[in-house]
Length: 283
Image (cartoon, rainbow, N blue to C red; front, side):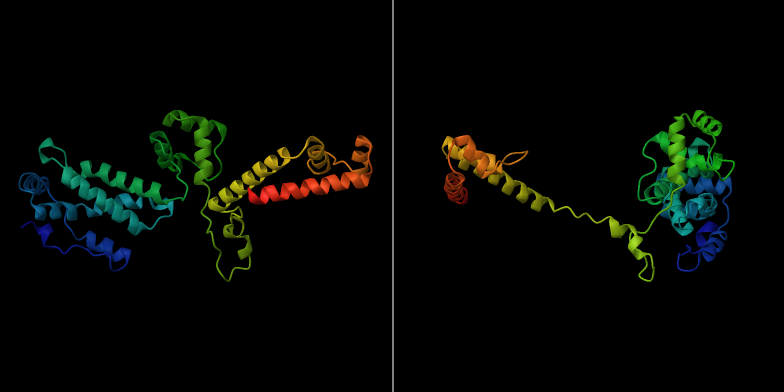
């Protein structure tokens, strides 16, 4: 049995440094040993051979994962995702193509770590297209200083990565942001300034809004029907007194219009309102 297979698989139970030290104990396979194990896996589905290939390349995952330390994600999580990529590479590796596994696995390891970063680095997705992803993973390394990019630098990066200058500016702003907790610590004196304090939606629930709309519609329809049930004079008096968009008429205004007393207008109005109330309640 190959020497690499005699080592126990490192378990993530101790510190990260202990895990890394354990990974480094696995020897690097020679080209002949790698070809032999890969052939057994391909033709015989030998899982022990797959185990040997994986263990001997776990130090590669650690090395690649360390290159992503600037994104603020736990190193252990990056290594774990990289190991997933390594396993996928081992399963797809063809030893008869004359390429070493290390060259083939790099792509799969980075791809898995990249996907993990895009899913977890920010609550809001930073990159959705292939061009934006390329910009996301290259912008940090292409910046030569910590300050804001100058217009000539923006144009140079945009030209090299084949994206629009405004996309470079937008990505720089988004990558320069930071995450804010929705709820502040209970001992924080400024807890009332946390997002949760002002993000509350005070609008009614959709069901309540629909019920209010239906009620308002029924009222409007009922009012229209009740008005139509009145004679022309009574309808005009009610509309002039209560439904004008501008200034409502007074009893004396309508009395002068119809040549009767203000008291008579009040009586007509009261009778019309009573009739309308009965009709609207029964609707």
